[in-house]
Length: 170
Image (cartoon, rainbow, N blue to C red):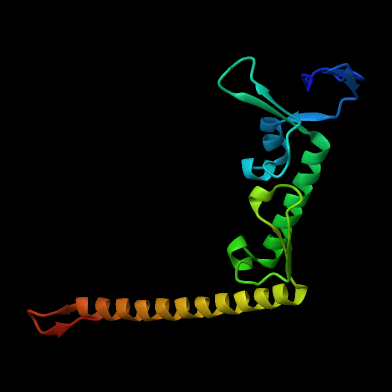
């Protein structure tokens, strides 16, 4: 493929073998990660347009992506995070559910298959997690109350002077 440049937006570029193509809006991998808040794993779902040796550092590669695809990926990732955040779920929580069906991941097989869940199952999981959280908070509150009571008892006994046999209220 031809060389990409983020500085020039020429109408066409030469790809070799007598072929000319229209350019696409491009973005470098590091810029995509900074501008769209994507991780290296997120960008692994996309196939790069080009991966060339960096002219300034031959030990590194310059990876170029289609910016429209990066923008769409960032939107999907953000939606996924928003749904999980609004429901209070983590990826480990979703592992507790059995998917209704799976399909090959259209973006990258390395990230695993796409899993589909029933909405009712997800809502039931959310209720169960909230119930577990409430139970855990109650147990913690009870433990804190017991610890405070023990601490109060110890303070009272600390005020007892064993030599004089006198108990002083503090």
